Length: 228
Image (tube, rainbow, N blue to C red; front, side, top):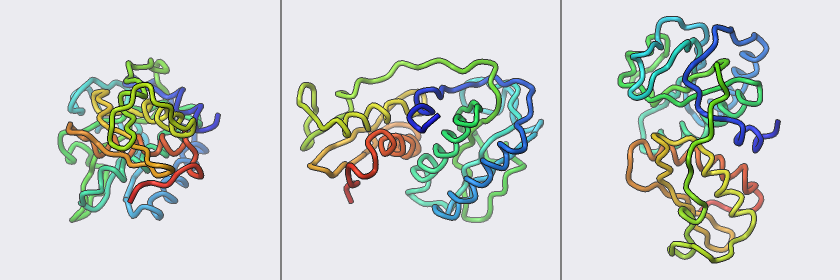
């Protein structure tokens, strides 16, 4: 399963089977988390076999059942923290999907709900991603059309042709999980330069980071440059 296949296969799952994650898969995910932490400066942490933290009251919205494993997204407080957590956290999510695991992004009301996560002074727990073997594979959700989020020279685009790589990137971005399925982002094209921006809403910077990773995977990083 390549990354685009993982993007298409992954759907949010809230109910999990009582099946431990195998040690080789834990080791694989931990190696990736270590690499991404070194690259990003984040302090992402994997927690396995936690029978206390997650129950049906732990999330701000939605119910979870059978959760025992999760990725905690932690980093130093800054304007860019949420976007970084989305971008680097989704890399772990897609790797988990390639390993046959299911996942769901979850926003917690208070970091004290995760006593097994280390949050140092000056750091913040942004959210967690639930991991494990789901009772289902989840279902696709309703999505905006590519034309809804494409801009060229600042204008809304309906029937204007765009390069295939750009269109493919936007399609991949629209498969990204977002808070309450809001998809509040736009991708603007100027030559080979792409500008991604969030629209007003809740947790839109986190969503933007996830969407930008998906765009890179769909478009190919050799096809474009991000706008400064």
